[in-house]
Image (tube, rainbow, N blue to C red; front, side, top):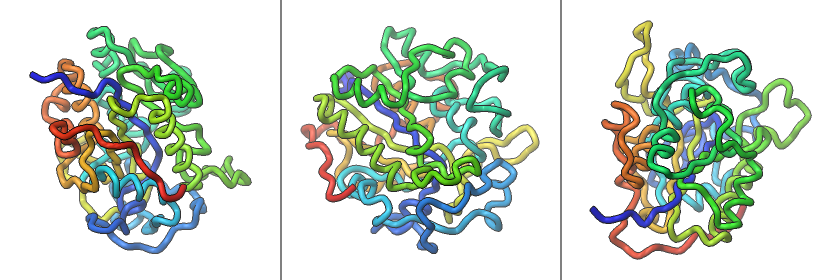
Length: 328
């Protein structure tokens, strides 16, 4: 088996947008045109599991366009955009964040005070970071909270959001990095407590932060051996016209997996250029990519069944150049 040229995987996790909400107008993609959303949105749509079950009637039918997120459209034109990529849980943030680390979630909703993590349950579940540890490989949690919910990961390899670009510029990234923006740049629509802060929920501001992270990787000399995935954790209460397949039920018989489509951009010297992937993927597919790249055992049955983002890469061609942005 040949050794992968990828030495660093970077998973950038943004917040609360469906595929149609961001890329519904992208040329050639399976999207739907809807009224344009204010930027930032006026409020945070209900995106609990109960709201997901009634989404056909209650989801917000609005979207952003290229003028709002030009760099994301540039990335999609130059690299790979996944149009059939789903959040893993038909619900909000925390279950999907758990899926992005452990390919599992014992919960379908956010626990109380979930971002503080105090007095919250700790789940004893296998995880990708634990398998990286066992293989004596490295990983980093840049600004994420969900690691504190997983036994053996709480408080470990924990850095601030700002530290990622510093490490990338220094050319010193771990094997796998999970990267989360501060709230104002996360692209999460404004909560009531955010009133008066024009940056919170502004998708253009959040996009610029993401571009800064990608640029830091390039400037730090890591581009030739890095795979970058930019995805959004959950549907955020926004409409998407593609009905997700049901592959798992929750304990009450309601749909657990998959949740709604969310965007995923694949940026790498080996990512297919100008490609729209129609292959079915989900957050778990990113873990499978890491398992395949670093020859790790499967975390659980979900990664066994997942495709390792195979339609997004061509490792038989020479490494391609870094992104060129026309506007940010």
